[in-house]
Image (cartoon, rainbow, N blue to C red):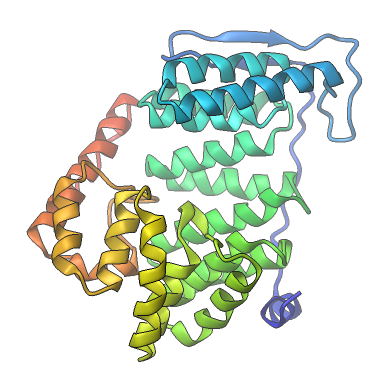
Amino acid sequence: MDTHAIAIMKRARYPAISLRNRGSRTLALVTALSCAACVTVQLPRGDSVSSSGAPAPAAASRARADTLAASAAALLRAGDTTAAIAAYRLAMAADPTHAAAGSLITTLYDAGHTHAALALGAHYRQHGPRNPRALFRYGWALGYTWQVDKAEAVFRELIGIDSGGIYEGWGHGELAYLARARGNAAEAIRQMELAILARPDDQISRVGLATMLLDAGRPHEAIPLLELALSRDTLARGYGQLPAQLLLGSALAAVGDTIAGRALLARLEPRMRNFAPSRRMQLYLAQGRREDALSLAQQTPVISLYGGPEPNDRLLAPLLGEPRYEALLARSRASIDARRRELGLRAIVTPR
């Protein structure tokens, strides 16, 4: 355990979260391409029950779900989203506790089936069985549709349900990003500290804490965390696949070590060709290539705005006020508002 985690442990407090009763034996799984279609999986009365209260699937069902989920992931990589969704549905039918449920929520959301994605997450939350990945991805989809209060409630529940597990730490991590979206830098740092306290060896949360410290203008504190992460994994990434190397290059430049920072970013660039446009824009800005970042902004349909309509990414902040970047933000807000209208929610207009 690193010294930062030890220091956190001395002062941190966990919120008291009660576990919900999940005694229902029937799981209604909304797994179709639209909210109008669903499949109901009846869990047999004779199934054994684990200590969590969820029926324990047979080994054969688990193996079948593993195979189907792997097939779905391969289909997604090949660009066949419809076939991937069908494979994830079959995996869930074989084993409703499988992580494929979370993957399906993400895939449905990314494919534009917002109502179906949220309905599936809501059914898992209400009826069970225990599936931390499904709850995690449900909270994630809520955050991306700017239903922040609901998202926070899901992540706080997840922290209690998966105590000691990876999703306890990642639940705190998502609460950190939602706090950042609210403009609460201190709470964002606190939640990332709790994520490391829950899972001291989790690289994603370590890089996540460095992200929040850098956002708060504290690069000297971010640098040791990033160096530690990269010493353990040269490809270390944080939430949203944010490369630790990109953050470290930016942090070094922020403390005046521009030469070392630029050298680090130059080594990273070949690996980032297939990254999301927002990540490449961050890289270009960190390298001082403002026009390249703006050109990419002009070519990008939308970027993610998690937790609200205002951008809160410090690495992209230098582009605020630039017409091409502002147009990208306008397209991104309109995209989320379209999803909100699909859900029967009020569209959010944020004039600048």
